[in-house]
Image 1 (cartoon, one colour):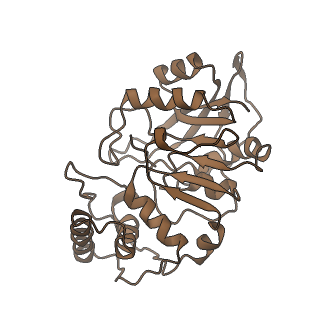
Image 2 (cartoon, rainbow, N blue to C red):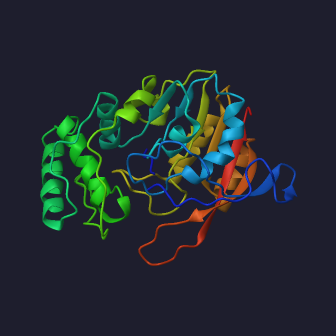
Length: 294
């Protein structure tokens, strides 16, 4: 199973839990909000949920004494927005988790960082060679991953069938590169980062779980292996059995909504932000929040 997830532009609209209209039973239509003055994610991340934080904040406030668990943590937009004291943050992408672990340990960027096409492809070759040699868990690999993420097209994270990072050089006019991450290191003292399948994640019965699995669309292979419909079902079924509070966000496809209803989640619909698209289609996505034990 994989998880995905660039921080998006800020949209200030009506905050959760106000509802625009009652649809039927426990279904509501909300607008996207983002007015959180917290640390921004250190990486660009496609599908980032920073805009969703203001919807989740009132839910989280009632449970903030619990450990916060995110099985598909991606770019950390939600975790940084909600600011839990204790957190278990997981992603199937080992390079992402390697970066976070080294940030927590005091990572400094010592490699050359410039918005230069030749340097980008030189660093990309070095990163892929290190991964192929089993050196993907090193501090140098973490630095290279950070540089590639900040410099590549749209902050995408995509790998070919050989497990090689293959996103091309980006089109930014200028890029600000960090040299150290002390602010994050201080915030992450009681945050644990893991790299495993959701079925192996050590979730305790009292944990607050927020899950943002890859969108239910045909193309979801930001990390080798993809994320199938069977993965969607398995994720929903596992979380439906959790005894503590659970929130799941996903694209509101008909089959996803039907699945969550079948598993007796309460449903809310959200108008998501505009999506990144190389074709120019930036239509707002309709998203669903599925809640249980809230």
